[in-house]
Image (cartoon, rainbow, N blue to C red; front, side):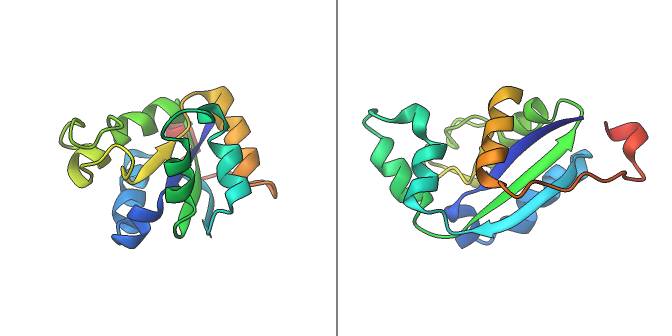
Length: 147
């Protein structure tokens, strides 16, 4: 079963969309394997956004991610990376189609509520970064149709 990291960024927490967004992943059939509320440090934000270092928007990404609490989650399931990215919609909420998280709830590129790993390989790295203690692996009653 594939895993992916999903972050509900500070704007999602502040706007009280944690339940709404989490419910979308649950209703799709994904399995929650890790969940915690984190106030990201500058160091964690720098590691998370290392790929963007040197770009004009890098500092604003760091400032935003460290501005308040973030909900870090690990979701598992068949093709969870692609499934979660489809549920999230395009990065720019103003251009994301209705029915997606960003299309329904966001208007901004930066304040777009949610981050999701962009590949299975990056998911492994990001999960290790945000969940150094590991995540829970458990047999679910739905395991035959989810994963």
